[in-house]
Length: 378
Image: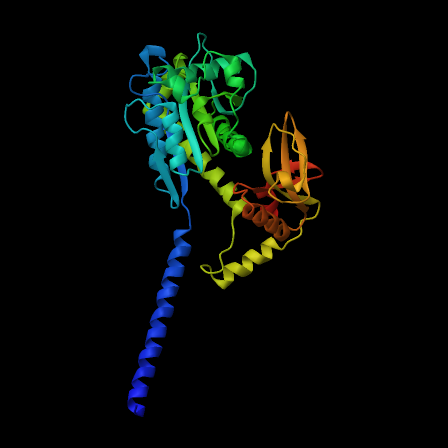
C-alpha cells in the first residue's frame, strides 16, 4: 500500500471521527434540552353541560362564569414562555370528576387549578380557596358536598368512586389522602391566590380552607379549588357576570400562578453546566456558597397525618430525618445548615432517592420564613 493511499485513508478516518463527534454533541445537546420539562398547568372550569352548577341572581349559571374565567387565565398563561396549559374543558360540556383528575395526571401536571362560584341562601359574599383535607367541620363538609354531588350525574359513579357517598361525612373523612405529599405546595398556592383576591381585587377574604373535594382527591400534584364569589349575592353576581369582573379575576389568578412558579423555581433551580455560560456559573456559585447568619435551611421531603419513626427504612435509606409536628400533621425534614450550597446537596440527595417534590425551607430563630426573602437580602 503506497503512502498516498495511506494518507487518503487517514484523512477519511479523521473526517469520520469529527463527524461522529459533532453528531454525538448534537444528540447530547438535544437530549439536555428535551429534558427541560415545561411547567404544566391544568385549568379546570367547574361543572358544564348537563350540570349547570349553582344558579344565582338573575339565573346566572356557575358553569358559564367558571368557563369564561378559565379561558382568560389560559390565554394569559399561554403567552408565558415555558408554561403549557391543559384544559379539562374549553366548551360547555359535561366532564366527570374522575376524568378531570385523569386529564391532569396524564399531562404530568405541575398544578391543578379548579375554578368555581359560590352560593348561599343569605347575601354572603367574598372569595375563598380550598385545598384537600378531611376536616370534620360541618360547614366545610356542606361546601364540599355541594361540589361533590355532581358525581351523581355520572354513569356508574358508585363503581368509579368505589362506593364513595357524597352525602356522608364519614365517607369524606375516609378519603385516602393521596395528596398529602403536595399539601404544603397546595396551601402555598392557595395563600398566594387569596392574597391577590384580598389585596389587589379588594374582595372579602374568606381565607384558605380544607375539605374533601373529590376533584382534588383525584389528582397527583399541588391542587386548589377556587370559589371566586357568591353568585347569589346581588353585587358579586353583577361583578362576576361582567366582562370586567371576569378579566380581573382571571388576571389575579394568572399572576398568582406565575408567582407560585417563581417561588418554586427559586427553591428547585439547578445549574446545568452543559448549557449555561461560565459567567452564570460563577454568579450562581457565589450565591449558593453563601452562609446565612441566624438562618437554618432544611429540605422538606414529606408531610402528612401519619407519625413515622425517623429510621432510614421509612425514608428510602435517608438518615437523620427530622420529624416536626405542625397542628395535627407532621413534616419531615432532611439536613440542617446555614450554608445554602450544602442544603442544595441535601435536596439533590432527596430527589435522587425518589422525593421528586423535595423543596428547601428556611427558619430563623425556630420560625419558618419565606426563603425568597432570605435570598433577596443576600
